[in-house]
Length: 228
Ligand SMILES: O=C(O)c1ccccc1NCC(=O)[C@H](O)[C@H](O)COP(=O)(O)O
Image 1 (spheres, rainbow, N blue to C red):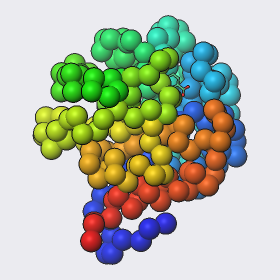
Image 2: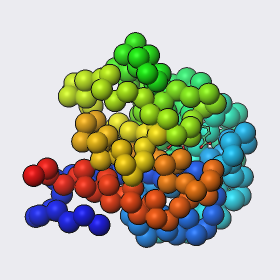
Image 3: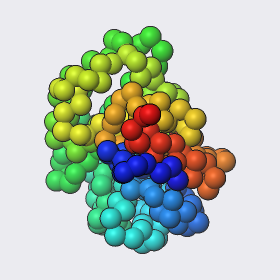
Image 4: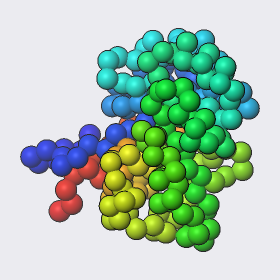
């Protein structure tokens, strides 16, 4: 772990997503993850059932948040997830409207799917952030085939992160193709409240790699330290 003197000015929150195994959950928590995501989207290679998410969420100590991820799920499916993991934060990755996301009366994370390459410049992120004013967090993901977890980044330089309207309320979560190699730069540029990673800490889809998790978290902490 990188040491800062006298202490980091900020601590970027870290969510690790798409866990399916007990050992991965235990390791992520020990390494310092703040939130653990479970994919309740049956078409995903990282999908778990609500019952399995509940088993894994039971391993979480206080102050580590379970997150249930949905893609165009029915309200009944979301409710089934919440019955299994009542303390969970919700994450919506599909085409859900602001009203659909808010309908469960629970804090939620809204994934914005930002076009990759030159397309990012044409994406009105400010309008998106305004539209989802009821979201506790806006997760900045890259638009890939499928709905997410694609291990692809968008062009972080396409937006003005110093715009107080864009970064208002500390609710941006940088995501999409983050790795131990690029996350320090991403955090220093965007200054998000948190980061979210799946592919970048995996040995295979749904199977996390302890060494990559350690390196990823150390790289985030490095970004949190004031630069010499
Ligand atoms: O993980 C999936 O398979 C998945 C499927 C459908 C929608 C979202 C999905 N995952 C989202 C995430 O894991 C993260 O929140 C985020 O998009 C980061 O993914 P990655 O680029 O793999 O780090």
